[in-house]
Structure formats: structure tokens, C-alpha cells
Image 1 (spheres, helix red, strand yellow):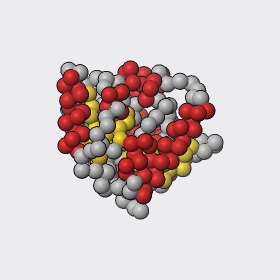
Image 2 (cartoon, helix red, strand yellow):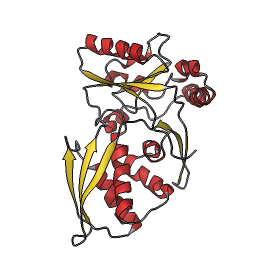
Image 3 (spheres, helix red, strand yellow):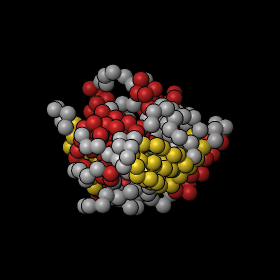
Image 4 (tube, helix red, strand yellow):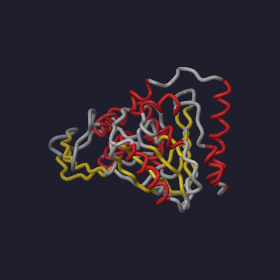
Length: 275
């Protein structure tokens, strides 16, 4: 329902257009290719199917800063890259068209909405399957310190551990805090994020799969505004204003005790182009 675009990127560059070989595509990857399905190609083919416009043959080079199976939206970024690639060699289409395709690729629109729109996005899937997605600016003062341990966690596995139902009290608990997140970010009451990041829906079930999650959620340090799982994990994100160095030190020390290599990034939001 809520997602934020951050400044790590996947880039697709068309190296060659081959008009004599329509609807073909050759991929080159700068570094490791996809671990499993090539989501860029899947999205590109879906766009071809839905839009119905033939495209010239292409040779495309892909480079990505986004780690795979890390909870940082690599699949959504790949899907959006495939949709935008299709658009670049056919004709411009409304962003709403691409949002409608996101659930077919991701199962939900949230990550793709952030990748398409930027900023903090709220996504709502109507009963007829249509998507409403709205974006606004993420506060520049709030940075995201993201720790990614070297333990891949496929989203499909992380989803399988979730309960099929949640008790009413837990539903109320999370609804209150989801609204508090939005208000805290819009009002500048960032101290409320510590309470707003508490969760009863998915983090308790996923904690056994994510080394250090329970400890990080329990950080009680004034430099850290709040901590939560990034996506389905195993990345963990700490929200800070001027406490990035302190959060980095705490997360680094935690993973050192766990004897787990990790990468820690301090990220800013990729803001929407239009207000």
C-alpha cells in the first residue's frame, strides 16, 4: 500500500535497433544477469501482448545497482524497465496503463508504483482490478540507512510464511500505525516514526528468516527514528535525519557479531517529477 522510491537504479540502454528482426531482443548484462526469470523481458513481452504494437528488434545492455533477492525492489525495477523499454520503441502511453500491468508481474502494484512515479506512493487496487496510485514528495530530511546482509531471501519464500488471516486487534494496530507513518512524514513529526514502524502483520513471521531483524527493531538510540524490514527482506532499513553514521555503526556492529558480511547504504528518495 505504501512504498518509497530510493536512489539506486537499474539502467537499460539500447545498443542497436534491428528493424529487420521485429519483436526480437538480445540482452547484455553489465555484471551478473538475473537470478532466475528475466523480469525485464517478461514485462517487455507483456507490454507487447497488451498494447499489440510490433517493435523492432533490439540489442540492449542492462546495468543495475540494485541487489537481487534483497528486499530493495529489484523485480519491480526490472518490470518497469521492461515496460519503459517497450514504450521507448513503440509510442508513449499513460503511466496508468503500465500500473495496470504491474499486478500481473508483481502480484501487487506497490513497488512498481514507486518505481514509476517516484517519491512516496500509496497504491489501491479497486475491486475491478484497476489501480489508483498517488505520489508525493518524501521529506528530504529523512534518509534511509539500508543494511543488506549476504543472505538472499526470495520474495516468494518470504510470502509463504505469512499467516492467511490476522486478528482484528492486529489489523487495528497496523492500520493506526500506517496512518501515523503518513502523518509523521507530512507534518515533520519524525519522532512518531518509532511507534509508527511497529508491526504485527508480517515482521514477526519473517523474523526467523532475517538475521538481526528482531535486534535491529529493538534499537533504542536517539539517532534512529525507526527501523523496519525493507520489502520482504532480508534488508533492514533505519530511518534517520542526521544519525546516518550512528545507524551505520549500530547495524555494522550487529552483523559483525552475527559474522555476516553486509552492505550498508545511506539512501535518499528519488522524488517525483511532478508535484
